[in-house]
Amino acid sequence: MNRTTTRRHPPDRRTWPFITRAIVTALVAVMGPAWAEEAPGRVVSINLCTDQLAMAIARPGQLVSVSRFARDAALSNLSDAAAVLPVNDGRAEEIVPLTPDIVLAGSFSSRATVDLLRRLGLRVEEFAPANSFAEIREDITRMGRLLGRSEQADELVHQFDDRLATLRKDAAPSGRKPVAVVYHIGNGTDGRGTLADEILTTAGWDNLAANLGIGTYGALPLETLVANQPDLVLVGGAEAGWSTKAVPNARHPAIMAATNGGDRLMVLSDRSTICGTPFVVDAVARLVDERHRLAASRGAAR
Amino acid sequence: MSRLSFPALLALLAILVAALFVGSLLIGPSDLGIGRALAALFVDDGAATLVMREIRLPRAILGVCVGATLGLSGAVLQGWLRNPLADAGVLGIGSSAALGAVVAIVSGLAYLSPLALPLSALAGAGLAAILVFALAGRGEGGDSLILAGVAVASLTSALTALTLNLSANPFATLEIVFWTMGSLGDRSLDHVALALPFMAIGWLLLAGVGRSLDAMTLGAETASSLGLRLGRIRAIILFSTAAAVGGATAVTGVVGFVGLVVPHVLRPLVGSRPSRLMAASALGGAALLTMADLTVRLILPSRDLKLGVVTAIVGAPFFFRLILHERRRLMR
View 1 (cartoon, rainbow over the protein chains, first blue to last red):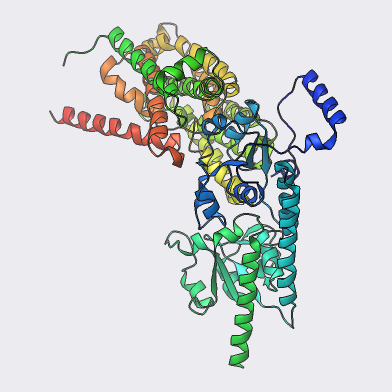
View 2: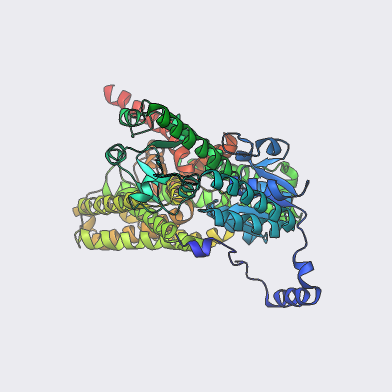
């Protein structure tokens, strides 16, 4: 994946006639940045992650539609807010009649849909999945700029950093850090450079996958996982409930045995980790609590 | 059973395709109403016109053209190879186009330009045809072609699976999986402009071999003695199928079953002459694919059912009926 082109501002792929472009350039030059920052009146989001960023930042009435997933409490942190907004299924035909000034999409939204919307002259802003807290901050700031709500966005970044700072203080390591590992169905894991890695390390854990040298998303054989005796195995909410004989999953006897019958298996709700939103702080907080619980039980055992 | 005359059957199929085409223009998530929808196609009506001309029209056109391509190529290949299981899939065209698309998605090319993905898929189909042609040699029989095709199909499917296997990005993996299920959703007139020339060239060339296929039913030797150059016909069939099906697959993703089932369903109605079956199968394929695409939009519209899945589900009952019918006929 070519990260540099999908992340940040993708170039406007419409070929504007030269004259239009010249006029716009002249207008921007004359009217200054105030004109360029004018808030869009109608914004449509077709991606769960942009849904949540936009709902957290937009002024009331500015967001005219979000994706259907935004209402799913398992996936979305703002399902209540989404319940009163019209929802879409991300099809061009639903979006065009809404006459949006900006369409917010994920960089993995349907290619055909994004290309078609651009072809029809709509401004589509794509957000790549955030892989770090720094990228979350950038996304919030960019969303604020796009919606003409930079002040709210800065405030959100501020709150995010405040909560993180508090948790970091709490997470100050004393001696050996406990080791955790993220387990995905089919023996996958999140290594260095992923959002999960930063969530874990911020909460004062060592990420086993990163220790093993796994970068981004990699394979982690069950044997390796069990042999390394992590203190905690993390699974996603949807994956935790998924039981199948076809592929190894969180209910595998080996994982059950390695986690003391599931006692050291932690289910992280998908809504805290699936998108790079400020709500990842909730996952950090839960992991800090879990670390304290582990330390307490170790202390009692000693 | 009195059989429908061939022109009457073609006319019926053509009416069916036309009706489904109009139905395809009228059905979608935005509630336009029949009158306004059709009027918006011709007279500028703001957003309604955008929806009709730029979203529903390309979808309806592609449904008919891609369906016709798959039906026609299936009839030609079944006639030429005299193999009831033949369709463009046995030549490895679909799976190679899929590999081309997967490469475009994984490399990030697909994100640079809207047409990068279809072009890459088309290149995959073209390379597959060349490879099959080189492998099968200059012989005249069909078996070497099937073997070469199946070999290329296995290789390209394995490479696609390998790419999925090694993909470090779950989102790209998901996009690939969905692409391989086929869809006509949100295709634009750009896609039509890209695919139609390839499909049209394929149709014209394939139409040209109809007569030769008719002669072939008398046996390869008789056909040769009638002056048919079998090697040349084989090359035409291979490359025109690659152009037409490659063009179709490039914009829709892999849509199976249409090329396989349509000729079987229509054969009892048109008799055994390949040239007649080709015309009927082109129309039948267009009808089946448009029907499937309507099903996608009518049933569970919010779940984004994939076309390739639905063609198999819509097509299978026809196939079952046919098999039962054949069995009864044999037992009699």
